[in-house]
Image (tube, rainbow, N blue to C red; front, side):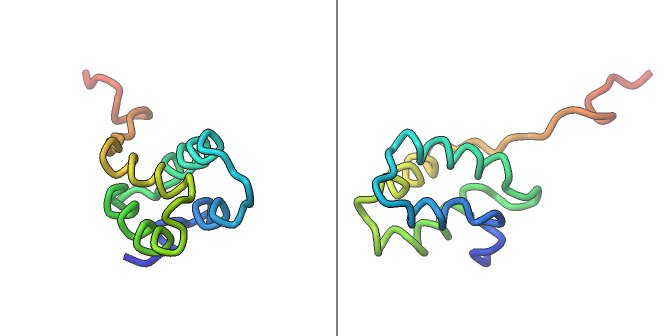
Length: 89
């Protein structure tokens, strides 16, 4: 899986460039990232790619911890809504 597919908006990449970013800010960025993961991409696989790309250079960065937590706690959301969620007659 390509890094550009895992982080299409560059949110995770940019978070590593922000000096003095807090864990709370990283969690907020992670949530935005999680909501923007394209359909068809497994979020856990994407997190692994992101960790392999960034964690080695910045093991103490708060986003590294957020990604590590996310890989354990992340659920693959099912998109609900629209015509598929309506009962059929």
